Image (cartoon, rainbow over all chains, first blue to last red; front, side, top):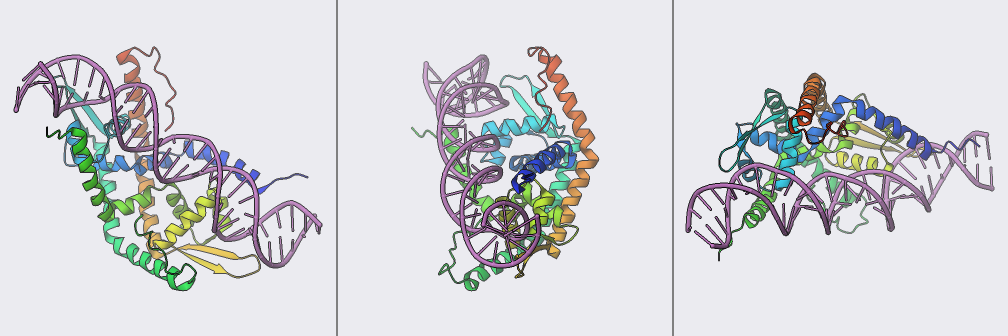
Length: 149
Length: 149
DNA sequence: TGACGTAGGCACCTTCAGGTAACTACTTCC
DNA sequence: GGAAGTAGTTACCTGAAGGTGCCTACGTCA
């Protein structure tokens, strides 16, 4: 028999899919935006240039490793510039490029959307969680441990 | 001694930061958008309603587990609706709600931005990788293993 | 008659992103 | 004079996300 199993077809589809993803600019950029720290760094830099330690303080929960890593990636992509001033304690400034400012605008649009529609999402969640509780009736109380994301 | 170490301050800052993030609608919605499968599912549903197996075929690389999980999350958030038709092989249709279509528009905007600025990003990457190669001069050829994301 | 398809659920298992800690060199403050 | 700050780097480790395989139940087709 040919044995063109569903799993095999999925496996083959995935390889094509992977090749597609690697060549797809949209996906590559979307990947960049999906990074949690990227959005935070870009937002932090939107008002103007910041020093490394300023960023570390503003973003608060970030570890030095992730901050450096994120900054390097963004610098490589031309989102921000890194300026080293060889003073006595070495001083490094980061600033958004025009491209980075453009990206910041996009993030602002996302933020606006989130703020506009957040109450709708919350209402939908309450509705969904409520239906689960009285519809099936099996759990005996609808476990409320899924309160946050 | 007081020992208000930098690490301790960072630790404290993180707890405040966490509390901040949990109450921030923007961040919660941004988290949703960061999910790789979410954007793919929303894009796949943008043209119209799809069945479970149609989605599995369109998105290709997705595992049944992740597809179900993503669909449940989006249903809970009111991004899409799930309609079960109790025919002989159970048939389930997924369709974007108006809110979901709105989100699809946002994703389209991101896609447009990516397509518009992708060449700039690529140019910046080539410039950055080139500088690394001839500036330090240590690697002796600028290792090209960082070609993709 | 048994394998496929539809729409998942459940459990295990791997992987890797991200956190932690230790280290650098140089200076200034207490 | 020792600790802290500035701007990181490196090695190690863990926890959670996500993949894989196996299962259901019911009908149909080869």
